[in-house]
Image (cartoon, rainbow, N blue to C red; front, top):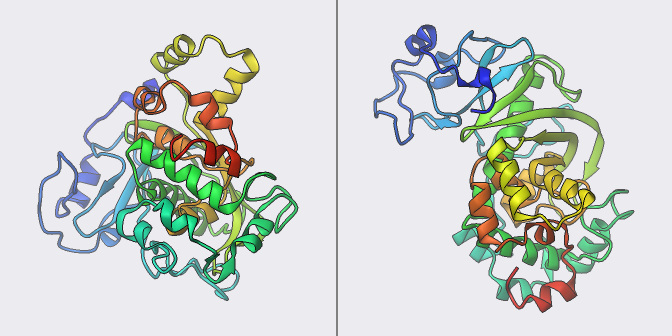
Length: 348
């Protein structure tokens, strides 16, 4: 954990009593059959604890409930259920709609993605429509001033070039699109849980300062609604929230960047650090990344796979840099145009 107060990992008697019958599926967990549903037996936010629970974060219970440990603005610890469930209604907009297919992958258009978690570039080369909507329509809707002012991709990007570019990045990282979508669903479900428990849905959440994920502290900067956004695909996905989060580099990581990228000027280094450690996006992106392998193009709302893997501790900074052969600045800043994607010849 980052920060001195995060180091105090102490026994939490009340919590241990509450979860004594529940098994955690982790490398250090035991296997025991739970006596009841986790959400009925564990005290979640807004309940708080004085000490850091002796649990991994995230962790998965035997009954499938996924949990993260968070730190509140009142300097207390709390537990939040973040399970990405199939068929769960979000319940806003007066229940007129929901995102009932949270973990679905678009197998009809992308069978290889559904089977392996990664796209086939051959399939992408032959893709003319996605969910029945033409590539041209999706690209027009996704560019700036299309279906939104900022856009879902850069002015010179198109949907196929963006899908190819990010698929190559994810493959280089040794990950899959569902693996990267999961922590995004987790942070979205933190916001959902806190919002509904606070009866403050659609507004900026309050009460949670940060949460812990794979031994990293993730700062939850903002999670609030600012109006509705329609999807660029022919699907039921809608957006309402702006979500901002980040994870600071520790001293060793700062030294690594300083030594590895000495030729970057101050502006470039600032840009590199921001793109690596900070994401400003919305709740549409977890669905997009899971369903289509789409993280948005190079816009202000992009959830870059490299940043996701770093912020959530899926990969170390050293491993990320090694995967891209010391070219992190270029990889994080270069847009996915048809020309750049074609010239890479299948590589990033």
